[in-house]
Image 1 (cartoon, rainbow, N blue to C red):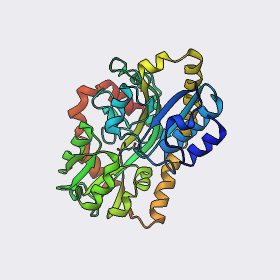
Image 2: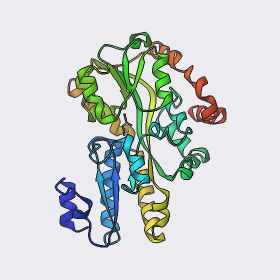
Image 3: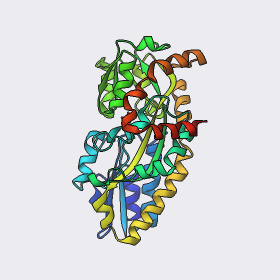
Image 4: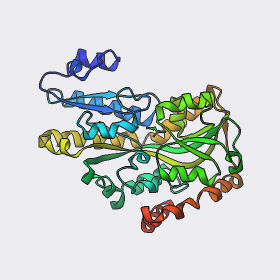
Length: 328
Ligand code: LMR
């Protein structure tokens, strides 16, 4: 990619892969759904693009399509299997059609914080999960962090009973649906790009997400407030098409692997901070954040944690035990 083309791409002026990449360069399209600013995934994807385009110039050229501009998460894995996009980083809850292994990340209150998630992902069990969909044509290259989730609605939520009877948008995961049902609420799976409109028009009453997503999508503007439950996790799998990956020249694959690993390490260690800054930005913009005392939080744990029993077969008691041991 020429310097002029790279500058045009970063300013958003270039619209197609062909416009920005030089003849003969391997084109790597990376599609994702979030904003690029104050967002762990958005920042990591941009850094990855910058490094590939600087260090692999002449060999490879990466274009990042954020904000669901190319595909939403419901479409991107199918597009990847068709060879229309080479990299994506959907949340782990979006691989439901391909593997049940990631359900452990959706079980409520499974991990005490993002460091515990990191340790679990970096264990042998976690690393093996990256290859759990190879038979289906998808290979995980890295786990990227976002952070822990909070819950919001069009009315104050202090106790689990406050959520009863409300409709909440959830990601397409059976565990996330069960979590809402445990609260007596109605889960409504929906693409990320549609959530703001659904909250605004009252199609749903609430949603659950990380600070960076609540800030980036401005959900706080159309909600009464956000309750700091820290009840779940949104993390990502940087994923590619097995055939495409294996068809790369070994030197290209190695260099790309190294850059992805370095970007992962650099950005995962910043994800907590990025989310805290997003939380501050929500408050600064007039959003209401409600904190829970220990007793109030325990009521949410008691209401949601029984969901573990429904999914123990899918995720394995040994994996649950390993996650709990990390929390200690
Ligand atoms: C969501 O759909 O709420 C998130 O998975 C979006 C994202 O990529 O963080």
